[in-house]
Image (cartoon, each protein chain N blue to C red):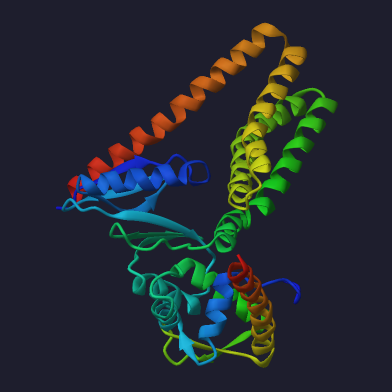
Length: 103
Length: 240
């Protein structure tokens, strides 16, 4: 993936959850709780994205002592990518909010 | 005594959804899938339950397995069985799906095609080569090569069909419906071309003969497989 390409929603959610070290189940739970169940990430989607983020070196394996519950954390590069993505998403929200207010 | 029985699969590239629905309705009748068996599934008799089934395609390293299955079990999906890169899971109805966005669903079908081309392309090339050489040479060698070519073709046709279907599954979820439908029509185009070649090559009578035997083979082979596997399970079940 090129750096300029926008992150998918699921990728953004997972990266946002990985600002602290977390394992897969904790990521799923956090996302579901924060969005009050509006967003769920299925286990197969989650696994696919974790592998992809590792390959991009946007996250790294933080602790593998528990092989069933390995934890991951954003890398410096990952933080940058997430920050850039956030900027674009904020613009979208701004556009929608001002549009709705004017109407 | 464990009671088992065998059911055939429609071929996962062709009827994954139908297969999963079939497994659900068998579970409802108390027959639960326990493993993949040659061209189908082994079911075991148990208590009737309502289970939904899902498949994932992925080559796993040994040190990734535990984590992978943990993801599923913590989301309510229990692992039933795996075969190569195919993993079968079941859950209670209402459990959130294992794929929740389009991007990763596309990758699921991409994973299902991994390795297929590596197998299919050399196979197609070799078959084509054998046909060509068989046409050029003469005598005993020709006869041997012709037989080899026919056998190879019998493997190539379903292989190519599966590969095309697997790719069109992928294109469909990518939203490239046009390509997805193209994938469906290609096999029929193939058949049409084959019929035309046969008509010109060997004449009408032989073409009808060949097509008829192909059709009989197409029905007889799956039936024979089902019969043998069912018989095998009856005997195996009695022993177990």
